[in-house]
Image (cartoon, rainbow over all chains, first blue to last red; front, side, top):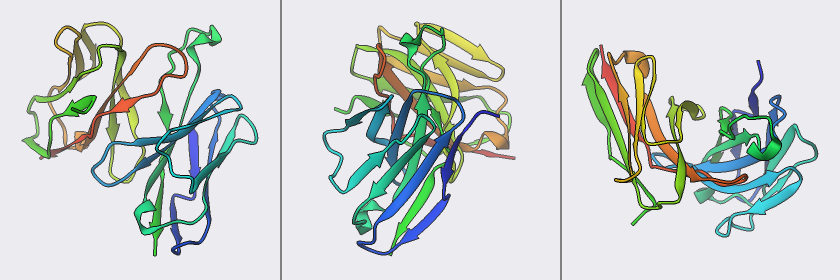
Length: 118
Length: 112
């Protein structure tokens, strides 16, 4: 089945120790998103890639970076995690409606990576 | 005022009850409306997607959109314990690359 996969599902890191979260997709969607979701809160968009074009949200801290080496993979790098960065990190994908394929550009989410910072 | 407001929870109902979940929004540019279901420690899963005002039904679920009142609802009929989850409303304006704005979510518990 086509899907969005996130690894690892659970990640524990130490304060200040860089961490990388990964996302892969078999949907062949051209848009990929990273969200941060804290307990009992709505997902907060950090940034997204439209094809290879990177789009950063204005309030995303510089501590968060992203890479998309190809269509299928996207990485979230947290350079110096703080205690406030402990959260669920969600990857999502969508297909641009202007592709002409007639699909909706609904976002499909992966299962998330729960990050703990000690 | 937040762009999307969702009724606070949690909500607990007995099995078989009809559940009504609601969101209001302030941005009249929103055109597409979604409901996501999120089980504990999982990613959100798309449940319903609507564009126009009116009702859309899918099995036990009905999504209702009232653009004039800027109000959307999700109704669950004959609720089951397996419906116990957090429900997030989400919406966006048109155009490629437009972003989702989520409600805060409401946690539903269906008691057997």
